[in-house]
Image 1 (spheres, helix red, strand yellow):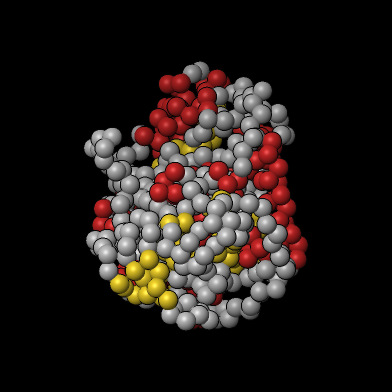
Image 2 (cartoon, one colour):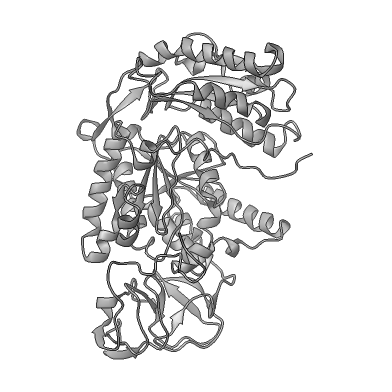
Length: 542
């Protein structure tokens, strides 16, 4: 419990005390990420009067005196920066000085903001070939191989509502199947309810209608879903028969014989009768779903969503780069990784277009960026509104800075394709999916597109989970990991203490394979994940 006089944020980004008035090497107390950077990231709280001995690339040794308190994870100026000049981190522009900044000054929202600047998209300029591991040498995990060739990491029965009006019935059906009731079906990982507040008062064939149907169909046909039932009210805009026809939801997509049960409340005579019919339908499916067993499958069958939420100044230095190394290895193993959140690559999208395998792939990403610029304008917002108050307390100032750290999750391999929200991901390798910067909405799209597991970086302490795809959460700093051990799966803050990034990434890869094989993630063990299903809703309710 906190009071108004208590600080509710993590005061430091490392388990150390602030350094007082002394002379220390810059590299002992701060991280200078790139030779062109004119700021460094404080490893811990820096107090006024601390003198930093620094030898910057191409310059003689100099001393920089800290002139303002600088929290851990925040930026300290290393050089004089005149008003209007670019401030650089990762060797890239993160914003522009709004006043003259002297060395030793705290660089943050009081003297730095985002302004538009030109980016060189140079489609494909940085594409480098990937040496794919031969099939006979690939790592394996224990997964559920489906008749259509896909491989799931979980074996779930999904109860899917077509409209908010049927959400209660869907939830009540799902609640019936407790772990005790499922004990007789050891190969069934759970019965989940997929509910949402939409499905009516929109135009048939409109953008919201199409996105919702595509998202729900993606969940029904997901590799982690062994069977599903559809639950509707009866008079909604999002009619079950239309969704079945539009997305070929007959016959469980070849996974089970027969058609998916359709529970229509009005036709069955009300809530109680619909719940009873739904329970009966799930009970009939359980023996068939339980017949599936985990068998060895190559890591090339994994589709992994890359996410971050509650980011801080360390996310782009520790956890996100560690995830990026794992993403590169998954691609090298022949697998697929999916980056999303278009508003959180904004200002850094040129680094992705330079990795596009073909110009049209990079051009599609730029088209999505332009759509978001117009969408934000129409909604009276700015994309730079994206960093949250918590992001800023953690050291992030502009959307450019946040984006540059976020794309570190994507590693270094070629960008193979770009997808619309919740579109089925079919390419192998590194891919991108359009979506908002909202974590749960973006993950909903990635999972509906086929992601069977989520790796999620956090610096402030997200407690995110998602069903049916387990979420592995990676803490960017050790203080967070120690404070929230029940929610954090891995501590990338070990890098702060000098451990090699590659060692942390290797541990994350092993954990990823273990979770894919059935080991519960921390969020999964706590039952977190149903409430996070949140299809993207553009607006325009009639």
